[in-house]
Length: 78
Image 1: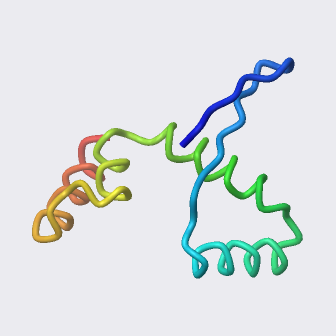
Image 2: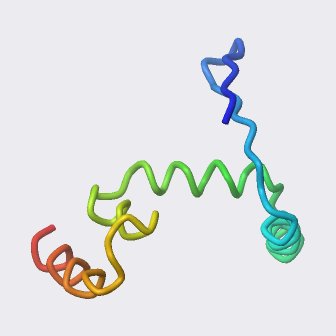
């Protein structure tokens, strides 16, 4: 991932997607009438605001056999 700063105090990131992920992003944007970059901005903002445990589950960093218990713990302790 490459980051570039611009004049409006924002950072531009370039990402690599599989063809299937890009197609799904295109379809989602078309269905919702939202530009692809806006979808990505909202996803990254949402993820960055989540509890670390939620981020770890979403990013696949929690072993699958522990995901259910971790999610229950998060729901009862946050």
